[in-house]
Amino acid sequence: MRFTIEQRHLTDVAGKPVSEDRALSFYSCEASDADDAVRLFARDHSAEVIGNVLRFPGFQAIATMRNANGVFTLQVAPTSQQMQLT
Image (cartoon, rainbow, N blue to C red):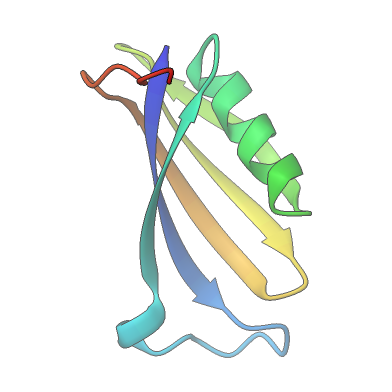
């Protein structure tokens, strides 16, 4: 299943809020479910998931992660687009 991940940068490594112009980015990934998408995304970004992955109906999830660049929230939702293999 293909997921869209919205990553919102909350704080930098010093714990200070990040400016709005670079606080939001979007990614896509393939995973079996939303929980797996969060874990794969964190692994690919050398990050650790903080706390639990909150799952919601319809293959959606929210999680918080931390890496060398700061703390982020992730919102995961299924996307209707198929990955093209070439």
